[in-house]
Image (cartoon, rainbow, N blue to C red):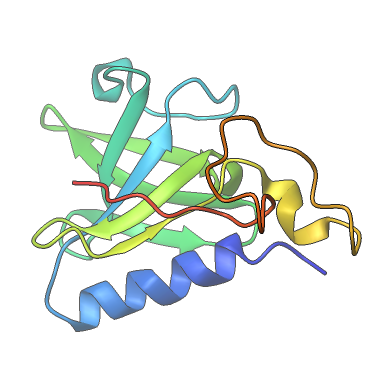
Length: 134
């Protein structure tokens, strides 16, 4: 199956906007294919406001999220690989979704859940975990 992350991301973006909130993407700033101004990178992360009023030409496809936004008053093109997106959430209330670290979870073979150290839930070690992002 194809990865579910881009489909979930688009659906959550629509849900957040339809709810009258401001969608934000939490992105891994160290991803090699990420194209954002250096001023947007802080503590290994980038937080991007992707509301209709903040960006132009927003395209969310299965591989990339692209748009034009203003940084320090200057319009800049932004390109974010979907694999670099850690979460999408509403700025106002933090509701949204944190995506699993390993994209390969969707493509794991039956019975092959892998091993993760430090897991408190030994019953289902391959199960993704959600964290609150504010």
